[in-house]
Length: 305
Image 1 (tube, rainbow, N blue to C red):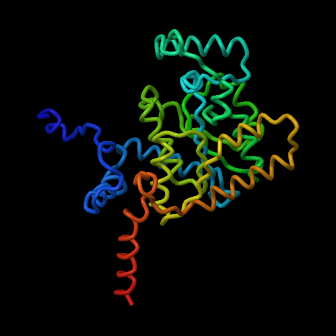
Image 2 (cartoon, rainbow, N blue to C red; image 1 turned 180 degrees about the vertical axis):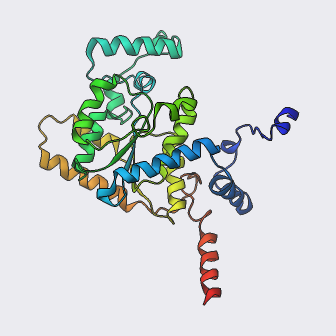
Image 3 (cartoon, rainbow, N blue to C red; image 1 turned 60 degrees about the horizontal axis):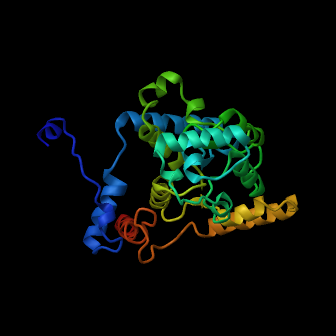
């Protein structure tokens, strides 16, 4: 601890999950202050992230500087852990078996363990492929002129899997495309630092599209709600419904588009959501973190008049 003090660093062991999400007001206010006001990325990460936001807005000039951010989880470890089967054939099966053994050493091959990829997909647990994300967005009304920022790690078999997404959205950008190799070099081997850059660019997008659960999208949704006064445009697709729709060989484009527009409408209508009992304050900051902001702003306005 002394060395940490000398370096002006405080290391806090994880504890948030040990507290109830419905803690006393004083604790909730402390959480709000820490999460939305005090915590910051380190200066180099924040600076590069904000630089990429500016570059993204420049490339989105035709849409008034507005862009859509998409959090895509189709890295090799995510695909392997899901135990889902995609369209990569024998090579995919070989790659995934090797990745599972490398990362989890026998966890998936224990005697008696049965893996049912079909059931996993029906339950909406499979990560969306870049192709599925592209079709979903086009069905929701985003055309090929939409500026998109893709937040992700290294996509599995990227050359093959990303081709249809680039075809549908030629203005798509990633941090690797917006930043120079020299700018990314200090963060290249640190996934959490790279995620911090993605987080910053997604935070300031007009629309955020999440395709998988996890801390990244949950914290980001809450931060955007806080930043934009309770309402932020977030698309959270129903992956169970998506699996049924994508696996229906007889569905036509008109029917598909109707389903996608309904899904988007449902997401938009739930942009402003009050926290319910047992909801996370990090995803639903209203009203615990936001009602006092409104009151203070109202009082400032009143005093000014």
